[in-house]
Length: 381
Image 1: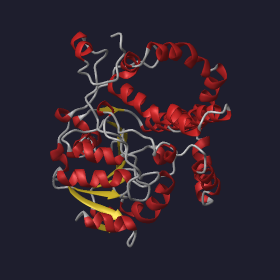
Image 2: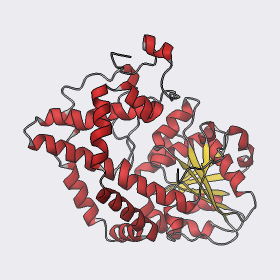
Image 3: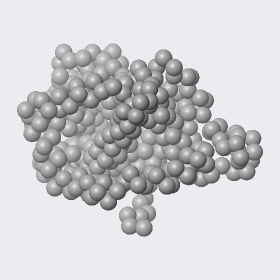
Image 4: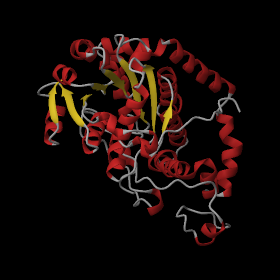
């Protein structure tokens, strides 16, 4: 099928963490990803400095972890590798004010998302390696998986290889935060940026929240209790996603009822009409052309009035977490640990439940016979 390819996946054996020994890494920012990168690298034996705004809340948190915390400009000057881990909309200002002067030939400038480089908000000078290591996970899971002796997958890209060893250094960094334990896939800044934005807008954030709200509102408008609509349209979504995460759509469909599976096949596709697909294509075109980036950058420069208004409106919607709290049963063992709320910090993370070993296809006969695979099963299998 179109888009099918065979990518090389890098693991621990492909990375030499020793490349970072004797060098200093500056982590600029201490939010979701920043805290995980800094602590994981330190525990991997790497010399780490955290660059932050003096007096901010992140400074106190990083200091409490006994990290070497310095103003951004000082951290950038002292480092051989500089990893930018500030929000996209703040990246250009932080870079121009405090980092650019320290980015000189022989150094490496790194990112965990290609937004600012791809859309020319940050233009690194010549003679500098420019690379990316992008964990495909919220930062708190990057940290907890590392502490458990595992890792999360990541993407790696090299925008400029001035030293002829930019990829090797990037893989060493990926090993330092634990990602080569799970696998690191090669990509480009363009591909990572555009596909990441598309996934967020069409499926993971924009698409799924709009679908949940529309389903919830349809049930409530038809006279069903909001609490019931909450469970049917939001609460149970996590249970279904857990199954897909564990073994793909095939395992999810194996685990649900025949009635649910038939409804999946016959009604689900009717929601994704040709008009919906055309809208997806337009959203992708706006990302590819830079229209979305320009819109978001301008919104941020004006202080985000529309962003804040939309945030208030969405947070005031009837579908709220507390609709499910009074009657929410304990999470079943197969579903993993309950999702925790936002962590402390500038934004925090929603930390997913305990990650189980992914299933490989449909469970075998023995698993079916005694239900040892742990999922909710059909009575007739």
